Image 1 (cartoon, one colour):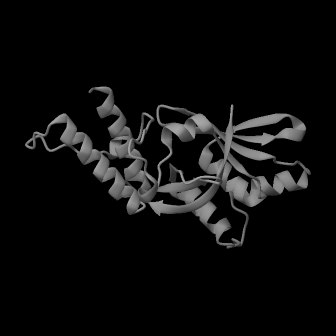
Image 2: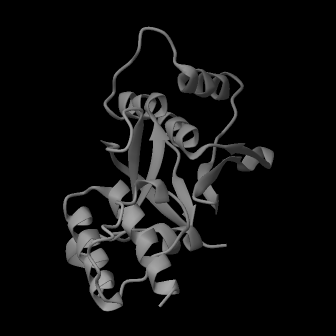
Image 3: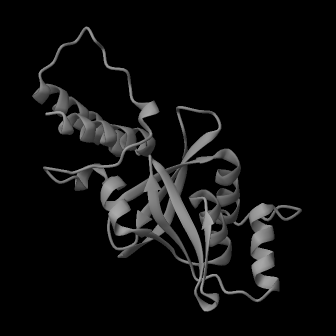
Length: 200
């Protein structure tokens, strides 16, 4: 299974919920973005570390790093290895101990930025769920993954458009969402585009 290294690009508030954020990851040797919806606590934990803010007392992810350090264990990498029904799965990999620990991606990344270890994703997952910035979208882009459909805009039943016009409309909305860096909406539109194509 091929692994692709990612960098933490940033966080954006989710318009769908006051308690959710889109964590944006970017492939190191490419331009695709991988948006993952995470909770506010995990978003805060990642943001604090990225901004170099030290809390007065250790937070949960600081505690995990402290345990790793105190026991002189070497965390090798974080690997986003699977996606089921729109939910991402990750592992903390300790190669020297030959141990892999199941972990939510948000927690895994919060620990990764504290331990300064690389973040990887399966190439299959990035191929399915990655989005490309507006000026880099190919003419016949292929988008995948089933999930996050709760953020779709409801279709106006009064507007009857042909299949071709509907497809073009979704593609234009997707391009606009990426241009405005609204990656959560882009992920939803990407899924809608795939579902629409499947029924043509």
